[in-house]
Image (cartoon, rainbow, N blue to C red; front, top):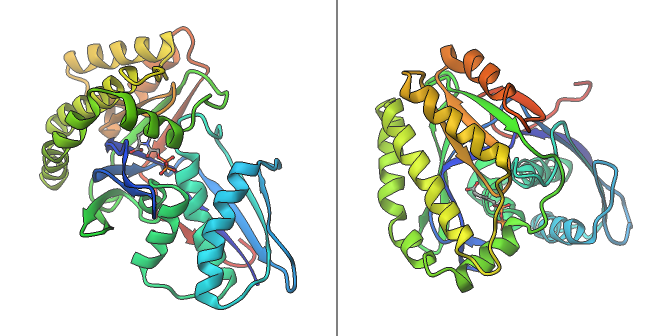
Length: 323
Ligand code: 2P0
């Protein structure tokens, strides 16, 4: 009754910010993401016969809110398996947790794969994605590798791989400008934006155009078009965040300095563009030949603590015994 799974965080180019309904944690819009193969979460789940309740350790620490979300996901899987035993969950990230690097996406993807493995469940991928989505809306994207599309369909979502890592081997350079946990989680921030930003309705209404353009750019391997629509969609999301009350200002001065550096590099012909999520880190998406130059340029910026380089990664998977 135990299993270990690995998953990678993902970064959205066309983003998810807001919900259709809180039941089932359904996103208001579709999204398009890249799996960050250089960053990993490893999660071990062990169901113990007769155990009451779950024990959840994230990077060796217990936290009530995370535990409640984990238990809600495990309850769905226990329901599928017809068991009631509690579990011990131990999850570790090899990158900063809760700092805008999508640790909840990789965390819940690894959790559902490990827990389903421990329970011996062979669920259809759509059901596993639905359960992961309950924990974190972006987690369904981390179940798959490469470039992933999460679409709204009917009353649910559909998650598909648009390109495997080898189909279009992009590289991501992450400039870490702060390592602390953010004060307001994505979930809280989205709810505030929905309720208070005058730009939120325009964000939702204009989203399909960006998503369609992003999908076409990936299908055509059109890097300049992907750059244009990704940067536009990112800044539009941050405009919604900035116009939320109270405002959601995730950037540091170094985030903005990195953004300007990426713009200058691209103006000089370097194939790179930026994206920034609900946190201060800047992710520079590059054609592989540009990654070294981009990493050097971002590492030289005041306030950049660390630069991580990542190829596209695979989807969440069980670790074989002895791995
Ligand atoms: C994204 N983010 O598309 C966007 C961009 C943050 C900024 O997906 O409420 O942590 O648990 O579903 O999964 C954050 O999403 O939020 C997110 P919940 P989650 O990557």
